[in-house]
Image 1: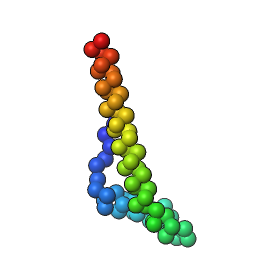
Image 2: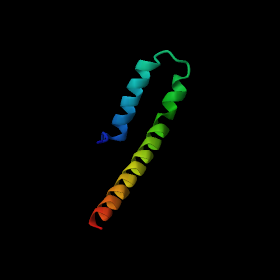
Image 3: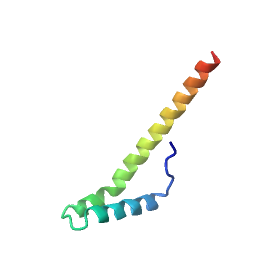
Image 4: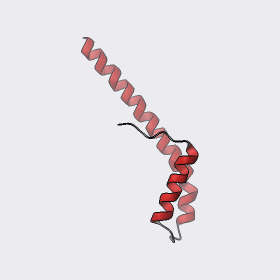
Length: 67
């Protein structure tokens, strides 16, 4: 599975566009928009952890295949 690589600005624009289409008149929308950068940073952290786990798993599998 390949994760899409975008700049922070592109990701935020995508999220804002999605938010606009899903919740055009929602009174809580300003709160959601304010949380977008934080949610994106959390997502980026999870992606980093996923990549670290993937690398560790790959290394472990390679070691087991060599044994």
